[in-house]
Length: 394
Image (cartoon, rainbow, N blue to C red; front, side, top):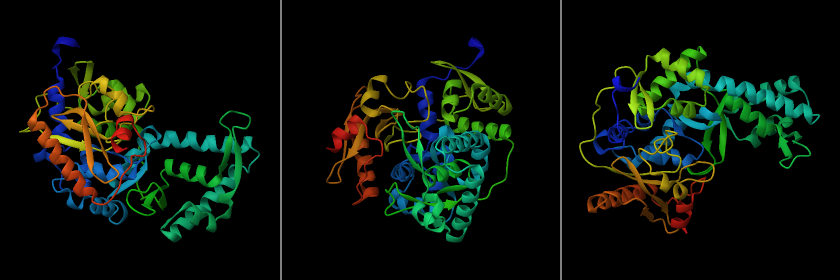
């Protein structure tokens, strides 16, 4: 392919990131829905991170928390559900069918089979019994609207049944039908995570019935999802695409062909963009800074990250499982991290000072003040702690 392909270097990729991920000043979004649409998906494992990822991208972040809650739990324009790599994300609700068909179906089949197998190995009731419990749970949820697992167990006591898992092995334990079945129903797209218990930072939540959606052809859905992601995050390598989607390489290649994606040259090898996107792209008019939360979709968006994050920074900014902590950005590069001190102050540290002068420090300070205003009296601790975040928050 080589010489005929247009080369897109790191600087241009950073410019694309700034504009398309709504991080540069003039490119910021007007609503949580607009921010989520631009990113395709927000990591939803940590509820607080969802709200802060939205706030970082809004032109006016003053009401970011309330607006995000309204979109998720009142208007229903955003939904928190299982998606790629068996991970919880927040998607625009209109994308539910695409995510379910492209990614959820395969994972769901494996999860249900695994649950039935684990129950059988423990001498627990069979698949028919499980189907009866499932129908009862979904009926109870329809009556209640939203409910906790404990509330559903009062309506359907069989959810409290327990069974041994991996008996005789080092990781053996006891599972309840409730914890495993509700997870399977989530992966199957039948239930989604509803309003949290307590504040917007709480990891405890209610369950809700999933919004209705049409059944799509899986291959068409994969092409649709990949096209959306490439438009937001392209150029990207095949390896990036396989990692982000969790698909087999054959599925990635089929979806690339179906979308008519164009090949380009990147510093790390061959890359892909959506059709018509190989030419020079608009860059931000001025330098920009951002303080992004843990698990932010921009920091986690690619498997190969050297073009925006120096490998030397990773031990401080990631946990052992590969989850990114809060990051400080300048001009499209991660240059440090931040945390919230016990007294509520936003504290940050630069780990890469190349090309970082007074302008950058002033812009980062302004972003820290912006973030502090969003948080107010709320205290936030990332669900997955990283070395620098722990040190700064001590």
